[in-house]
Image 1: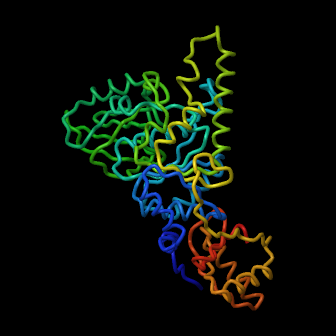
Image 2: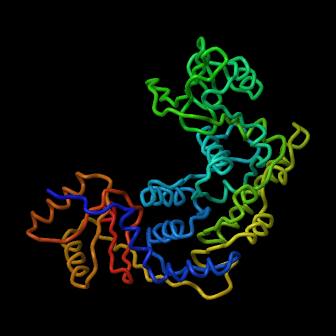
Length: 410
């Protein structure tokens, strides 16, 4: 039998005393337009550093990873380390430029949630994204605010007025709402699935007054939250985006810190996407009216210039913006054990003898029980602390004397 002694957020507290993190924090606080290079991080150590910086700075953080899959892993690490923070994913809405049929409905919802959160949530966000997502322009602050319908409990408002708004913004009336862009009316009850939330809202009217607002599960129709107010956001990639657009870097708060992994690779991918958009646009000429690529998408040159308005932290080879000294960490990647428990035992024992604390991350309690059982079967008493969270890649940090291994790499 065992107990989970620590959680990911508690281990994260150790990083607040990391000498390299303190140095990094000091440089950012000294210069609002700092350009810093961070080297020597291994595995998910970069997630710990990013999360620690966010907690210390209490300012918006935009993390740009060149690859979508790696960005999703980084997001998962941050969500485990910062369960109470406003951690969001900003994906691309289209797989190919000028092909509306390639749009991903879930991604459009996620993009709308991010924009609405920036516009209305007072908590500083951590936003994880990748080049293809930044390549697409977004609705401007002003137009998003102008086209967002705010509704609060106790407000005097007729259900017909809300119906007219939803109809004007191309919401589809259905019997039961199951996806964003739909609404249903039954007597004095209006269900609506906004593009700003991953659950629909149920609004009950008493005459011409909003009596209650609840979020609910569209599968079982059960309420999940009582709400005092909501924002109903239409399809920002559709109707209101035709009004005016700006880059995502123009939309995020001015005091944001931008964290970039492999800057040159990220910029190359934006350049490639823009070239694809230009090629697709030329193929459409004469067949249908379309806006030019520069009105729908962002070029490498435009985004590079806009990034200079922010504090920038680069992680990886070939820095583009950082010219000064590098902040050096001393991370060591998790070894490849290939389920060799003799090798695992030797390594964990060596770590303990060296004064290192072993942590094994797993979101599966049975997997941790299995690891304990294997050590018992081979007659080895190995000291490690299990953590009931997943981690993308393990690492060791000699400066903090901690070893963070992940079960799927054992």
